[in-house]
Amino acid sequence: MLKHNLRAVFAMDRFFPGLCSSPRPARAPWRRRGFSYVEIVIVVLVLGILTAAAVPKYADTLVRMRLDAAARRIATDLATAQARACATSSSQTITFTLPPAGNRYEIAGMSDPDRPGVTYAVNLAEAPYQITLGAVDLGGDATLIYNGYGIPDSAGTIVIQAGKYARRITIDPDTGIAVVDPLITTVDAVTTATS
Image (cartoon, rainbow, N blue to C red):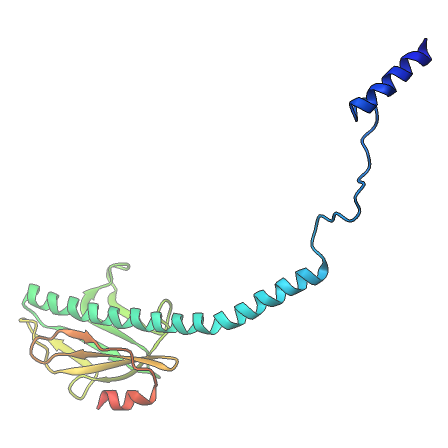
């Protein structure tokens, strides 16, 4: 009787596979589930080539963006000093310090919004700008004074540099408005930009 029942169970296994037997081992060795080392090496090489082509363009774009941000910051701070001069009916002085003595500018009499009690100063060599003041010509010196009416004591130019790029900020003698000129692509052009 037991033999007969076992035969019936094994017979049912033909019609319902896996009902009574243990799971079958993987039977298709030709069916792989991963990548070969050659495929992985090819993908890594292609990614390496693409990265090598993109990194210089990324670095170049980063330099231009820092230069543009610094130029806009200087123009905005000059406009702020001019507006303060008009609002307070008193003169506002902006002093630029060129390398090697420094790489910064400050607005006398204006306190830093982040550090009250400290004179407002921007160090252009530090992050996020990391640029250099190339040349400052504000009527023969590196100081610009807006009178109580917002008129500058002189016209002038400020040239900032980063890598092979430079930007020039021009101060109009009549209105005192600072305008950021287009990108200068070589540092050699800086000498002609200031003259």
